[in-house]
Image 1 (cartoon, one colour):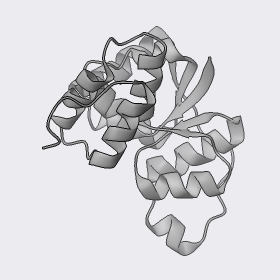
Image 2 (cartoon, helix red, strand yellow; image 1 turned 180 degrees about the vertical axis):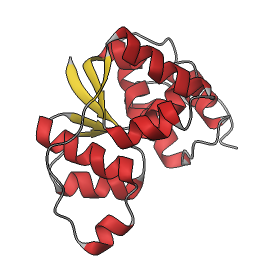
Image 3 (spheres, helix red, strand yellow; image 1 turned 90 degrees about the vertical axis):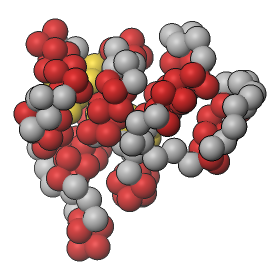
Image 4 (cartoon, rainbow, N blue to C red; image 1 turned 45 degrees about the vertical axis):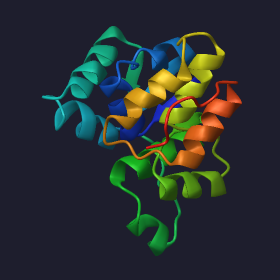
Length: 171
């Protein structure tokens, strides 16, 4: 099992589709930096995902951890990163951890820094491979009913990666 640092989006959307517990099942520890905690657990405390993050922290399997250093990035890179993304990338670099982030720019910066990446869809794919969810297609259908942006290409690649045929319309 891996140590994972989570940005806000995977926390939010896994909670919205009722799959938040997968983080605990798949990872030895889940770390979030303070900016992500503030966004999801404090400012989002009135949403189910805020409650899920608070409960996970109370149970001890999700921990808030402040990165020690600061990323050395160009002005363009910094401008397009949210504070939570910046802290999550830095924490993943420092801890040698897997980073769960969905935003493309954050993924690009992290990849350039050599960080191992996953995202909401990647967590669901791994859960399907490990037998923790019965159907990736069903989980992705739930995800599509939220405001999560999932391209047809990523959808089809994810299904193919676990051997599930796409029998539903791509609407």
